[in-house]
Amino acid sequence: MGNEVEDICEYLATSHGIRESYVLVRHIKLFLETESAFTPELGIKIWKSHIHPDYPYHFETSHHIHTPTQAGPYYPSRTVAQSERQAIDQALASITGFLNGAIQSGHQPADDWLVPNEDF
Image 1 (cartoon, one colour):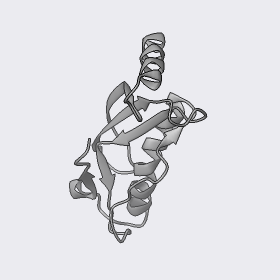
Image 2 (image 1 turned 30 degrees about the vertical axis):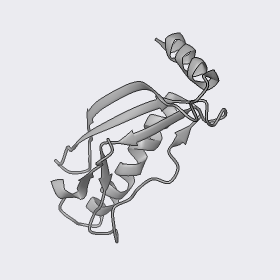
Image 3 (image 1 turned 135 degrees about the vertical axis):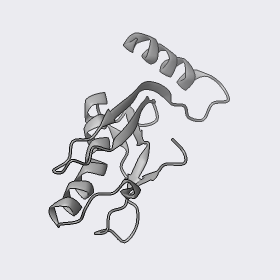
């Protein structure tokens, strides 16, 4: 599949009339392991693009995190990576850092900490 994705990315990058494009590489469904019995479901989409040649992978998560220790939901500002694995790691870190931090602070985890991403 890797070569097919790269072929399509190159084709779209050279096609007239297309300003930018993203090709879905992977859609992941997982359940997070936390420091409590809370195991929320999370989705991650990994996209590939030629927009940033050094960072061809992009991610988005099915949810944003908003724990009691935060003023508002966290929306990652950097969603690009050099590899697919790095994109997955960054996506997970954008959720788990705040999630585990709130649990360690003594808060009881709740489903409403995960705010659905309307664009997912």
